[in-house]
Length: 331
Ligand code: PCA
Image (cartoon, rainbow, N blue to C red; front, side):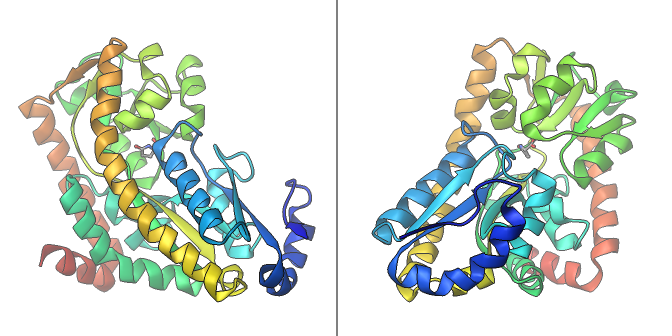
């Protein structure tokens, strides 16, 4: 017996009402199908890592738990995914952690420029922030399964940028509150654009520069609309896979174990894939004619000053719990 829980967006509300009452017996004897909304395209390494996670869950459960991925915001748009999982409209989903920074500053710590600009530092910062992240998610009936960073963030522009003043007046694409703030501090104007919409945003002139990874640059064929990539290595924002606790509790013990084991493997695999991705996607930018620039001393200094402002603002907003995270990170 197959319980296909959520088929269309229109059916979601109704299906959700039934979903948890079905969960108990469905998982005991039959196939459970979980729809999983994610924000990024099929070609992205995060999505591919999640596909491997889903395969492993299916294998480990002998096919009793099947996770179907709906990538690129096709089931729920990125801004809706967290609440969809919280409400049980989808049992599991992926979001950029820092999209939740308006709920609690702890979710924004991975996007403070230059606080943790290497993989080792990003891992340490993740470990420091994780208890607070889990607590905040737990308050909403959500559980963190795993989290994987994007490659380090750099600046894409239609000219070489040697100082922050060169960004003055540009329309800079943002993907979270921190990139918005940085764009404004740099003298630009900003528009929040989802990754799958980047090519259109450039071709229609809504934006003319962006701060993101080699990964998203290559996935969106940045060579079609910019000429330079400045490898500033400013921070490594993370995605996370979250699960509705009630949906998780409805699984059999064997299924729960399979999900948790596959999540642990996915986190390790994802961190390694991200490191590899940094090099392979930077190479792809070069192969397609983008000039990859080592940032000038002046640009580094200017960005560091913006980073200090943003770090102070983050600490101010995060208060005591923020101080705890920073202490854990620095010690
Ligand atoms: N890619 C995502 C978030 C960070 C990144 O490298 C994006 O640009 O939307």
